[in-house]
Amino acid sequence: MIPLLAQASADAPISLWPFVTLLVCVVFIVIAITRLRVHAFLALILAAILAGLMTGDLPDPNDLNKGLFHSRVSLDTSEMSGNNWNKAVTWSLMGFGDTAGGIGLVVALAAIIGTCMMGSGAADRVVRALLAAFGEKRAGWVLLLSGFLLSIPVFFDTVFFLLIPLARALSLRIGGNYTLYVVAMAGAGAITHSMVPPTPGPLMIADGLKIDLGIAMIAGLLASLLPAWLVLFMARRFNERLNIPMREAPGASHQDLQSIVDKRDDQLPGLLVASIPVAFPVIVISLVSILKLFKATGGAFFPYLEFVGQPNIAMLIAAAFAIMTYAQQLLANQPELKGKLAKALSEKLESPLSTAGVIILITGAGGAFGGMIRLAGVGETIEALADKFSVSYILLAWLATAVVRIAQGSATVAMITGVGLMSAVIGDGSGLPYHPLYIFLAIGFGSITLSWMNDSGFWVVQRLSGFTEKETLRTWTVLLTAIALVGLVEILIFARILPLV
Image (cartoon, rainbow, N blue to C red):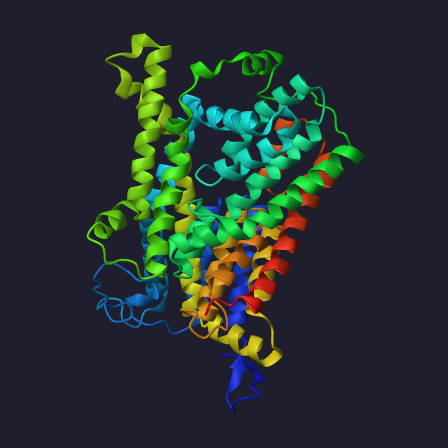
């Protein structure tokens, strides 16, 4: 340990070695991902082991202290007692397994829902209903709401792939406003992707900070309203000043656009059926959380509602509806699949489940890294320094996440790193002058900051929209940075005037 600062409130010095450990590990993650092109899963799990090796004397994993990772398994460590190298690996793998086990099913089910909503036309049906309600003159609102809502259960890249043909079709039909449509839907999707569970990043933050998932969903949605309005405002300004034309782009040929324009509503699922996979989990999970918040849990029906509102069960039911809708549409369009439907569905879901598996691996490795950061004592060191220099924990959470986001590009990796750090700093949040959900929101907004050329989302937007790199920097990058800053100011204000404690 290297004591470099004296605490004002005590004689014991503040050791900065845990902070050195954190800095080395973050630099390792950034260089491994951005320079060496190491997969994020490998970079994070290796960083977790590195943190353990740099920590020094790690505790023996046992049934008494396994709560550091809230592990679900009994441990026999008699053979490794005193061997810090073995303990670094064991603790890292415990953190990986515990995190992956906690969020794995929800992530996989979200991937299934997204694929089935696209394949069945359910997502198209939701968008068309919004278009009918608002009218073509308010098509910007339609695409904003579509991106906002669909990015809750569906990954951002998937939503953009889904909506960009509709944006191009609308621009073709109306005769302009292409920049408005692209920026509105992309910006809104980026917000809920980082702010509202069950998207993996926000789900990981809520789990790491031990925030009720329903409360996290409600808080994320409410905090996203002002930034969503900002997205539409800036999209209109970009449209007026830049007026980027619609160019040829991958995945959206003229024939595809024309088929979207010509498709009839009766070829799509009904609106109620199409909406269930999105609406059901949000409603039941939030309802259970609200009833618990107001202590209205005494009814005989509540245990059944609580079971259905458990996130894994709610998502499972939503996925079942999505699969049934997809199956009906497949049989309607391809009657020859009768008797072979199960095989066809299995093949359709193979790709999204493979993608979900990679996300689970990365998220689990992030959990391992966050756990090792806690064991390294980073939380105690940063807490002491923050207290000494009166640094806001909200600002600290936002800055830490934003730095990782800017350095290596991935919003999810930035959120994982941010929650690992802040869970170590605030513990159960009982010592905060405000509810820990404000830390949750700060990490989410920090992860939105400055998407540029090291972010896969940047390239998805640039390539599929037909924007040039310079145009994408002037629109997408500027927009997301503005969202992150407005979000930070918003939660700093509300944490002071509405602390919720």
